[in-house]
Length: 206
Image (cartoon, rainbow, N blue to C red; front, side, top):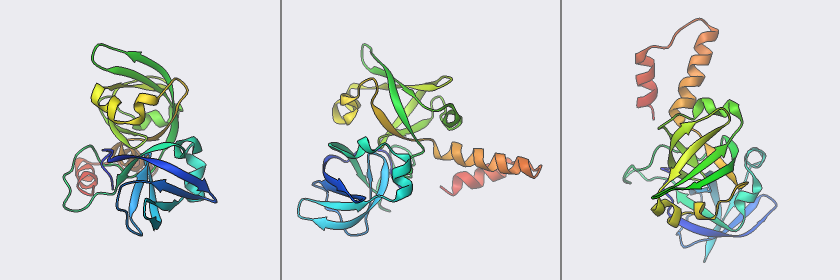
């Protein structure tokens, strides 16, 4: 599990035969889970200046492989004694979005992100979303896109500062929205409604 708070901007040294080699200051250990631009991967080899991770075919079929080149966001998985900040992030990318509009404002920058409409069910106004591993808040949701407002600190400290119209993004939607939608859909199939007690149990499980 992750929080969506970026710990380092690392560099991709190579990517071949499903093996991703990262140059990083993070002291990774064999078997560690590390999110690379929002994708949860497992460390399979450690080097003096970084580590290797392996991408499964399922992962490669979902993400845009341009997201594993050049500089990347990294976040090690949470430990039991860590402070809980950001929001609950699994590192499971749901879809790839595209920056469709960028509007600078007085003290922030608006980004309009286009996605396939079927994913908007799990993107909620004022709810949480993960973009390339970054925990962010959704401002507005439209028919085929949503709006993010990025403050100057986040713009400066992440790769968002390099985003342009047309940039592809790894998107993980809200965990609770996905789970509740899934349960509701399956309860409807057997004509059984979900109760507040059921929702409490879902929330307490995460």
